[in-house]
Image (cartoon, rainbow, N blue to C red; front, top):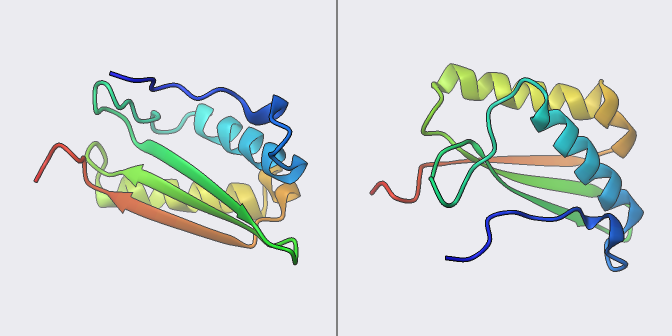
Length: 111
């Protein structure tokens, strides 16, 4: 069975303040009127995983896994544009993200 919820990294000493800020902004963005987050239990939802990497040069890369099953290609493009706008021109721009990788996946139950 396992756990399908993740706690906040705010209390994790091994997570940088930059990453904590980015995670908070990402959560704020996907909790707005957006597609639902993915549930490993029901296999329903879109936002599956966020991976954050930083470099010694203070570059900040985010890699997003997004499940496509419930949205049309046009709706997925809108989600991409909304995310890009949020992190380049809106509240998330404070994070100074240098790279965004948006990986669209099929539901792993389907072959």
